[in-house]
Image (cartoon, rainbow, N blue to C red; front, side, top):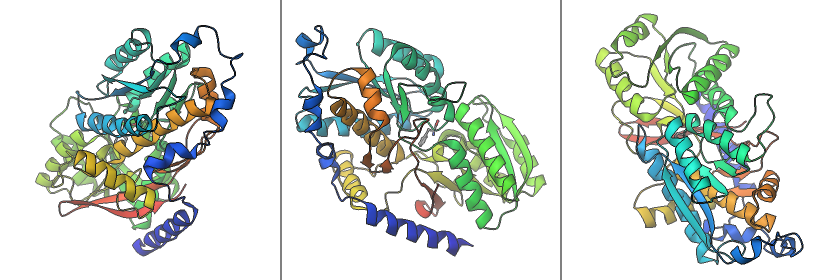
Amino acid sequence: MKSRVLLSFVLLVTLVLAACQPAAPTEAPAAEQPTKAPAAEQPTEAPAAEQPASTEPIKIAMLVPLSGPVPTFGVSTRDGGMLAVEEWNAKGGVLGRKIEAVVEDSQCTPDPAVNAANKVIDTDKVKYIVGETCSSASIPVSEIAEEKGIVQISPTSTNPTVTTKADGTAKKFVFRACFIDPFQGLAMAKFATEKGYKTAFIMLDQGNDYVRGLAEAFEKSFTELGGKIVGKETYTSQDTDFSAILTKVAESKAEVLYLPDYYNIVNLVGAQAKEKGVTAVMMGGDGWDSADLDLKAADGGFFSNHYSPEDTRPIVQDWVKNYNAKFGSTPDALATLAYDATNILLASIEKAGVDDPVKVAEAMASIEWEGVSGKITFDEQHNPIKSAAVLQVKDGKVSFVASVAP
Ligand code: PHE
């Protein structure tokens, strides 16, 4: 079973390699046909008020969780985004103007994220936002962005409703650089099924949009693929003792324990599951991706993610090298997607030819971008269609196991 997955990965890598343009990340901005940009800067189109401001820096905001439950997410997202800004500034900025990044701590939590969004829009007069990281924070920020006409691109928020309105159509100003949870849940359900597992137990925090959405997606796909959900239990983000639930997991004899939460919860649940002798294989999603994931607690587990630093495409290897030279560590998916998202935003401003969020949102909707995390074009719901990587935690290491195509 495993060999079939591996085979399809090898095939995928070969295809991606063939399609990939070996542009170094530092060259990425140049790929966006600079000849188009000045042409769009028609003096007649620019409002009079735009003229005196045109030598001012273009401000962008990064809303990232530097404090709160998942601070490694914030640090990685900020660092990846800032690297893109530095590279653009080194090449002269965007529309001939320097880029200034305003970084706000939005805590992966709705209220602080809303306050941070209002602050950067109303006080700093920012018209473009990269962020937030977590879906529960990105969703309320997206309502503000849509209402105030501010372009928002979340690097990593995978819940579908970040970019869509209640009627299912896209929010005009809101985009993301990552795949969405229905696909991420399907990817792990497929992987579990191909490994021969037939039963799964799901643990979830109902109050977290990301966790709830991913749990639903996995349940649906695993069941459709012939698997059985033999138990489902909820907890809250404040819980620290999971022993009652873990007793039920052990009694259910489930082969898989699906735990699609962030690393802070995975560390607790994983350690307690090991103490209790739970034998189910733990599986989860991108929320496991952190330098602070407890590799002992999560040992033997698998999670879906957006990229692997082991990917041999030159664009990935250049990115890993540049990031390492600057920060002394291997970039995680959050840093990588923040780099891609910031590049897409700046390339869209350049493509629009004018510092106007309405035009930039239009330009972004039709952009094509060769990112580190894959080739990005947006569908009708402003979501990129991309493959997922399955990673395994084993013997103190996280390694690449398979790629699942959409
Ligand atoms: N996908 C998560 C969310 O929507 C955020 C995340 C992305 C966390 C990538 C880790 C790695 O909340």
